[in-house]
Image (tube, rainbow, N blue to C red; front, side, top):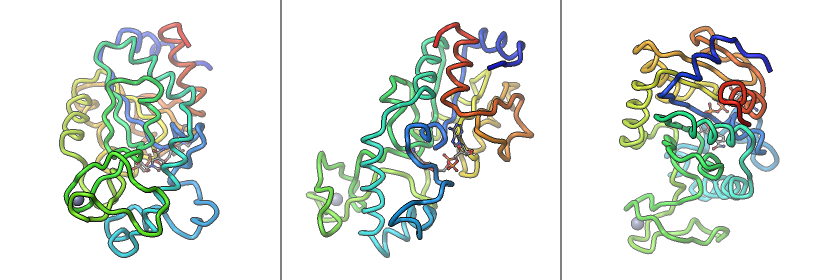
Length: 246
Ligand code: NAD
Ligand code: ZN
């Protein structure tokens, strides 16, 4: 792949970098993005109708089962070259923060260390009532499993539409974005706020904003560089071009 020369020179000298990733980074690991049609049994539901507190209040078992299916997929999935390339990038940039909207844990599995999980972790569940984290739970019981401490319903440890982000995670994400000389946006449709606006903290301080996506997005006209193609191809090529490793 060919990249603009001045982008390569610039990145080579960068000492602070923030990255925001979305579901597109895990697409090549076989995990569906939200925009992809739901398949099989789940085809008639839109994610926006399942990933909400209201849906869980009305039909807890339906929401639990959808997450149980996605949890099993996440646990079976393996990091792909996009995840590996981001983990490699971290080794070359002293101040590196990987902010992710993904809940699958694949960045950590690939070796990324400074990860800010904005939307939680699908591999864990917590009590919807008291916040207790059970070490284990029955995955396929007839009913939604309940908390051993207070008998409340257990739910996935993710941020649902309409819920606020953990304040510590949002704070870390904003601080990293403000410090960053460059902000890399990878595999996100940039429709979910506030993640979709983090790049502005970098741009306001004079930072350079770069987008990597399969196709153009609503941000494409605003970024400094757009690199279009599968993240699993673009990122390893970029890392090789800048730091000489794959
Ligand atoms: P999205 O589904 O809205 O957008 C995915 C984006 O990735 C699109 O812009 C698409 O063009 C791009 N894309 C698809 N395949 C790609 C590839 N191979 N390389 C590069 N780009 C590719 O996802 P989003 O923007 O992350 O936002 C939706 C919400 O979905 C988030 O809140 C997130 O928590 C949740 N989600 C997470 C996972 C996961 O953890 N793997 C999966 C689905 C949804
Ligand atoms: Zn409880």
